[in-house]
View 1 (tube, rainbow, N blue to C red):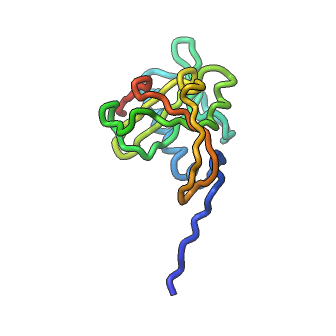
View 2: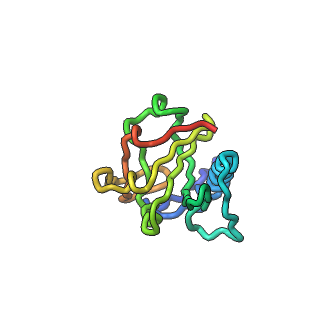
View 3: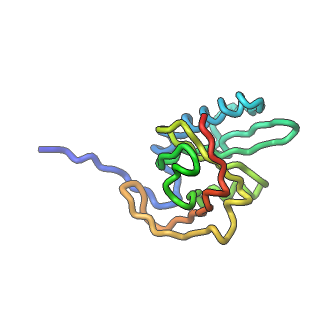
Length: 155
C-alpha cells in the first residue's frame, strides 16, 4: 500500500518554519555577499532573532534589509512576467522603525529585485486576498507594486 506524504498547511500570513529553513540562509548570504562587494559593512548577529534580516552601513547611513526567495523566474524588469511585484503584508511591521529595503531573489536566474518600504506599503497597493494552496490557506495581505518602481539586478 502506497503511503501518502502529508503536507502541513499553515494559515495565511503566519510563519512557516519549513520555508524559513529552505530559503532564509540562502537569501541572507547572497545579499550579504552582494553588499560586501559594494563596500557595505554588515552588522553581525550573535543569534537568530527573527527580526529584520540584515543591517548594513555605508557612507554613514544605516540600511535595514529583508531578504526572501521568490518563486517567479526573472532576470530583469522585461523578463518579470507580471505588471506588479507582490510583497508580503506581514513585513510591514518593519516599516514602523523607518525605511527598509525589501529584496526578492530568484534562485534559478541568479537575480534579484528590491524596493523600499515607503513605496511598497501604500494603501493604493494593498490587496486582501484569499489564499488556498497546498501550503497555505485563509486571508492574507499583499502589496502589489508596479514593477517599474522596483530595482532589478543580477549578482
